[in-house]
Image (cartoon, rainbow, N blue to C red):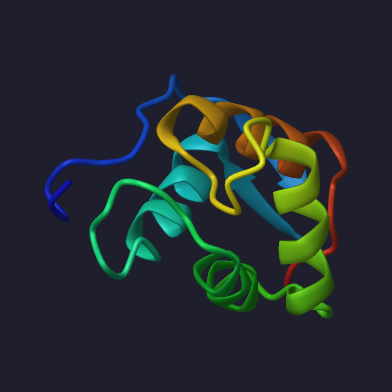
Length: 99
């Protein structure tokens, strides 16, 4: 999957995450940008880098937790079919990003 093809498209939805408001669309953009090898899925290291970008204080832990939560087929990646679950979980748990 090329960079011009996002992993997942979503409807606009606003959620205040920590001190910085993130829309669902903005979070999707962050995670899509971190599919560094353009394989259409996110590895643990790609997740870690995405969480670093959005200011997670414990990006390695967040990546592990989210991978455990959303990786339903247990292949070690967030695949296209698991991506929405990842975004929903990030928004639901209101992680402290930024400020």
